[in-house]
Length: 61
Image (cartoon, rainbow, N blue to C red; front, side, top):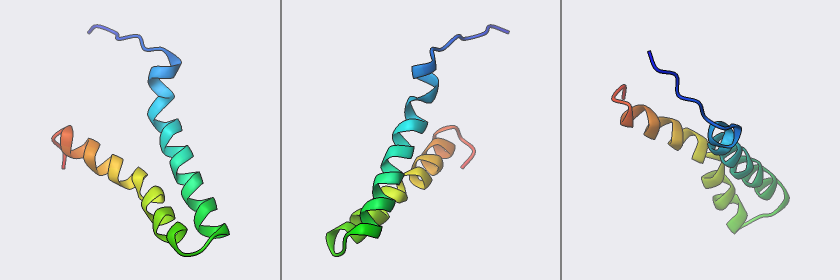
């Protein structure tokens, strides 16, 4: 079995992006009203959407 080496950036890039999006959504929805409530819900749900998309793409959906 061949081992594929990846850099730290390649391994942690998407989790870091999802974390920042989720945190931005939580803080925005807690501190502001109106548009930020909907935007916050959308940003927080990006992690769930990414997981569902990855599982469907991998054929385990």
